[in-house]
Image (cartoon, rainbow, N blue to C red; front, side, top):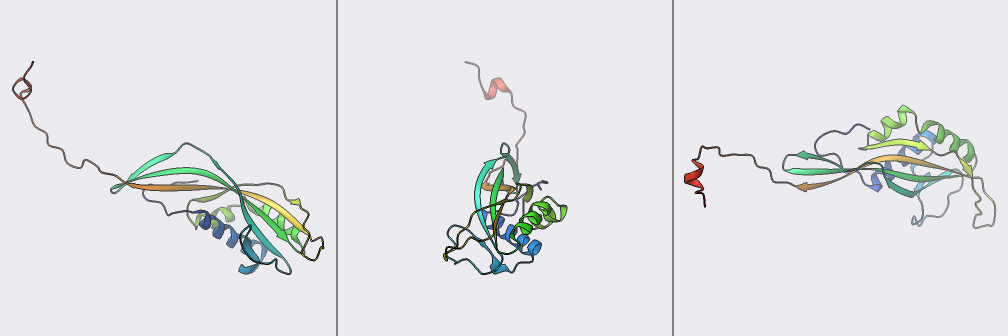
Length: 178
């Protein structure tokens, strides 16, 4: 991932999920309401094909990097974010295969880069999962875990010495020996 000097755009977990959700909509031809965030979404499962994204883990990739801008210090942390994507409904297995196939494609990298310092790392092989609906029916559900690199930043005010007074001093006269 290429990093620009200066203040980067602020990338949050919400930004990552928005970017990934929009990419899933484009890749799987799903409507925006058919891709949602898991766990605390307070939305009943949809009829038909839909996807649920859940952040499954985070990990540091490298040591922090510090850059400086106008009056500020910027600390960068390269982090891996794992997002579990559960695909439900008809064609979920084919959709999971398509997601795993296209996640490392340059078009995906370009798409995600449009949201800031986000890049695809890898996709785990799709696996089928058990899912029992509220009507006690087994439904076709596939899962693929996507790992992304995200450069999180923190910006701090920084004072700089921008002027310097240089002069010649007689050291013995200015700082007499003891």
